Length: 202
Ligand SMILES: [Fe+2]
Ligand SMILES: [Fe+2]
Figure 1 (tube, helix red, strand yellow):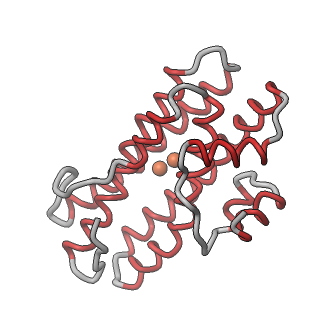
Figure 2 (tube, protein in one colour):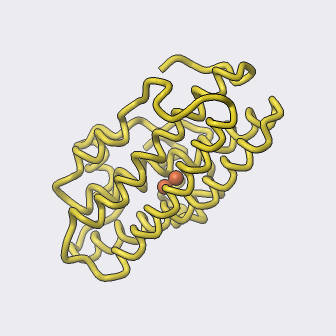
């Protein structure tokens, strides 16, 4: 995907389209987490249903904004990374929780503030407000991922830090680069030890 110049309407629309596509995939991913993995406690299913509902709201907000700019969902090519990780982790709920909410959605926490500020900087305050809404809700999604990841580790007698490291390697998780949104990650339930590892690149 080419880097977009948010100062042009088309560049800004392309960037918002890329985020809309992530949100669209995220709806399906949350529903897939419900449908695919049975035998989890009831709150697991209500948690992911809430996530699906919020992802649908995010997608709708972005699509409405795109339309107000004279564009629509489907007008630009889109990146499929999120769905590739969904397929790669389809065999195990532990891997899914580790790599989708705790890795890819958490990466969204890091990326959102800078995107929000770029949008604000070019005067698109409506889009900046959507990015802020998404960031606030995504803290909750990552928190849900964290809590079910830890629950699975506990059930299986696994150490969360070592287990995450080996899953990230096995599923070729993208290398995470700063700046990290440590405040949001803390609010989403990452431990200080996990955050130190992240910052030190470990
Ligand atoms: Fe979202
Ligand atoms: Fe999300």
